[in-house]
Image 1 (cartoon, rainbow, N blue to C red):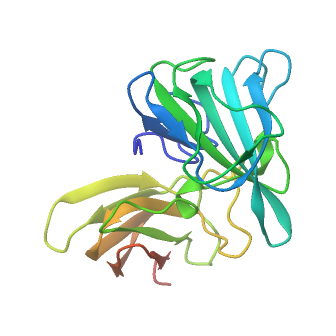
Image 2 (spheres, rainbow, N blue to C red):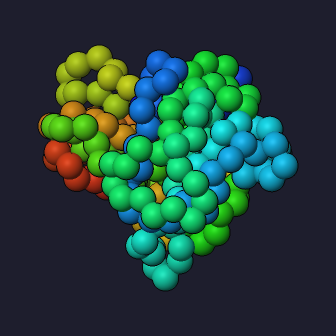
Amino acid sequence: MAHFYPYGGTAGDTLQIHHGVEMVNPEGTQVIAAADGTVVFARPDEATAVGPTTRFYGNVVVVRLDRQWLGKDVYNLYAHLSAIQVSEGQKVKTGDKIGLVGMSGIAMGPHLHFEVRVGGNNYGTSRNPELWLRPHDGNGTIAGRVMDAQGRLVPLALVTVQRPDERIYRNATSYPATEVNPDEELGENLVIGDVPAGRWVVAARVGDRTAVEEVTVRAGETTWVYLRPKP
C-alpha cells in the first residue's frame, strides 16, 4: 500500500483528494478479486464516468460483492488496468484473476487503484479500503477520531505514529472535511493501516495543542484511538 497517498490524502497538496488506495506494482502484475461477487462494470471509462470524469480511471473493473454492509450493496473498484480479464455479469470468487496492473487513464505510473463503495457504485460513496483489507501478517490497523477539546472532528490534522522512546515511524493526516466518508458504525476520521503489532504512541496536532495516546496494536485487528486535547 502506498502510504504517501492514502484514503482522503492529497500527497502533500499535490494531488486531488484520494477516494481509494494505491498498490504500486510493475505493469502486467496479476490483479485478483478481493471478495466474491458479480462483475457490474468491465471496460474503459471512455463513455461512462466511474470516477469524477470520463477517461479518468482508464480500464476499470467493478465488482458488486455478494455480501452487504448494514443492508447496503458493497462494490470493489479496480482501476488503471493494462488488461481486463473478466466480463460484465460474470461471477468471481476471492482470488480469481480479473486484470493486470497498468497505467491507463490518468495514472502517472503503473499501479492498482482500489476503492470500496457502499450504498451505490459512484464516486461519492467511497469508504476507506484499509478497514476492509486484511493487513499483512504480523500487522494491524489503527483507526479513530481526531477531535478538538469540544469533541468536534478536526480535518487534516497531522498525526504521527512512533514506538515509545523511538523516532517517528509514520506520518498521517485525518480525513478532509469533504469528499470522503467514514464507516457508518465507526465514524472514524483517521485510519493508519499495516502497522506492526506492539505498543505505539499516536499523537495529533490540534491547533496549538497536541493530543497523545498510547495504544497496543494486535496482528490482524483494528485498534481504536481517540485523539483529543485535554480541556
